[in-house]
Amino acid sequence: ADFTKATETNPGDAAAWAGRAEAEKILRHYGDAAQHFTRALDIDGSFAAAYLGRANVHAARTDAEAAQRDRTAALRIDPDLASDVDKPGGWRLNNRLTLADLPFSS
Image 1 (cartoon, helix red, strand yellow):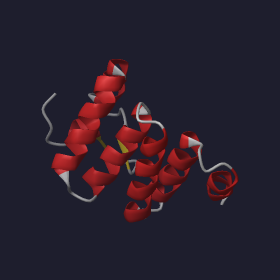
Image 2 (cartoon, one colour):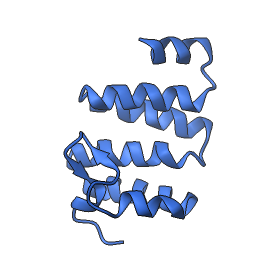
Image 3 (cartoon, one colour):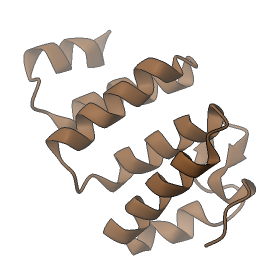
């Protein structure tokens, strides 16, 4: 509810859209989450965490190609994220898997 209010109050705030998307991802509302991560990226195309969040959504929806595309975009923007993404226990997918646990090549 707070992120929804934040996006209504300031629709140009990429972080608010990403926060709303994260909340939806946790609830497994993947369609809404993907849409709101995309909105965050439309506002700020250099928002690496939004690419990773959307990659997790794609992975949860078993779209490995789209997940890999967003993962690659995130790491291109911020290579330092690799230490979080490319290790077990790193960037979490629904609190169970990490992107590193999925069948991607670095």
